[in-house]
Amino acid sequence: MIYLALTPAYVVDGVIRGYVALTHHELFFYGTPVRHDTLLSASLLFMPILMLSTYLILAGTATQYLLFKGKDFSVGAKWLFGGALSALTSLGLIYAIISKVISVATTSLNLDLNHVTSAGTLYLGSSRVSLVYPTGHLLSPPIVFSVILVYIILAVITYLHLTSSPS
Image 1 (cartoon, one colour):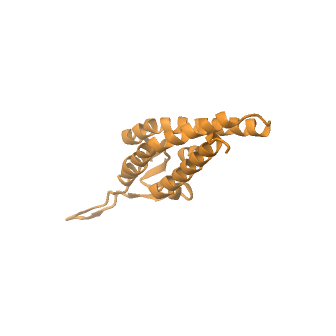
Image 2 (cartoon, one colour; image 1 turned 90 degrees about the horizontal axis):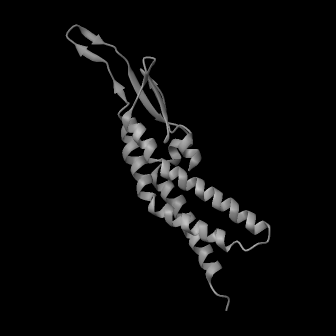
Image 3 (tube, one colour; image 1 turned 90 degrees about the vertical axis):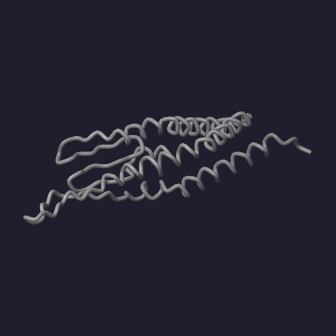
């Protein structure tokens, strides 16, 4: 998720140039920097997801360390189980940011400033938004949901296996 947050998901070409990522954006209108308030709010809303991703990486690293040192790693599995529950609750936030905020804001950057008048056509330019491979394609909600769901299922299975009493 950190990779998806930091790399550009959309590229804008035309009179508006730049890129849009989940945590930041850089847009220029005829060379002048543009501030997009919706994208700024989306980057602030995505910070808890980044914190959760960082937590999961650190908990996974600590669990692997305990496992390879031959120590009891059930505490690390419990940390990862807690992270899986947090990921489950954050699915709604992830979906809202990706599909409702970022997608709507970037599609509003598709502009056609050309005007037809009685004197002829006035060409002021246009801009086009396109997805960046692989980040833009990996941000589709079904892919994000399925990855998080697989993680949650594996965390629950691991937790149940470690906490079940040997019979």
